[in-house]
Length: 328
Image 1: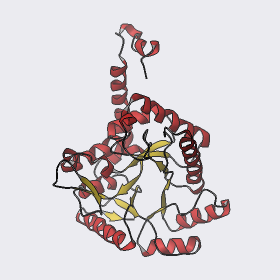
Image 2: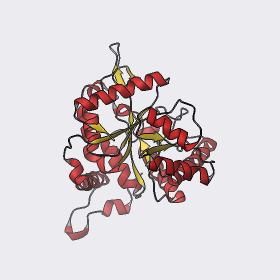
Image 3: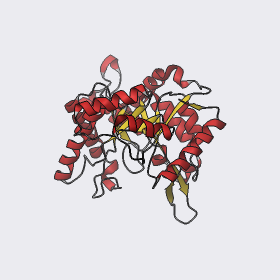
Image 4: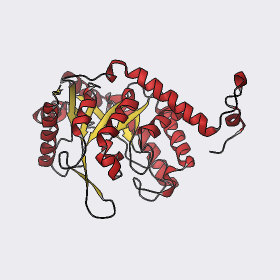
């Protein structure tokens, strides 16, 4: 976005010298960070024994909402992915919502995985329609959020591209996200964008910038810290990275993903996603920070079978015990 006359005249009041667009954005980010810190309130203070919610996919076959709840309880999950689709009848949606509420299970998220900033018009149009449908479903069933990535300007919907970090793309993300939220008008859920290594938001600060620019009450944060680990520096400093995310984004975080990442020893830099406990992510810090936001679901993902999910859950529960944290 090129500076316009309005940008140039920011700061003229009260005899102050004009702010450049760069200085204005920097000042605005500081303001957002200040608001975030104030909204954290007591959540910014460490909690001992904070209640956590763990969830993941259900592989067991079940029938109806009662069977779904029983399957979740068997796995000792306190959070769940949305089990329904956008085309399910309203009575069915209400039945699952009621079953979850009565069983004290949080429906964490509804996925809207697609590329709403695709360079292909047909792909982009279909992605926007999917985002609207899934956000409406999340609102109907009372999920904490509907989640997508911002997408990519390249041919791979979730892949890298030189244009992904341009100001033009940032503005596209802002306008696209606003249009999705404004069209659906959710009242119970939030639209969120998962953090990514090669697309916005790629850091706590870029997420803060998006929060301010999108400027919608029903826009919030989905945090996947593994997706932010894109260098050896972030790999070895994952604890600090996680603390920064919760410090700056805590009031807005609606759901988190649980996985792990492993730095390989071959040149140049190779980072592989692995099961929790097999990589270098600082899970002790991750769980302690989550304990300061009770009720925020931590959702396991990207594992090949039920056995691997059981191992991942056991590892996370073990780390939680070591930190004096408990599950709902």
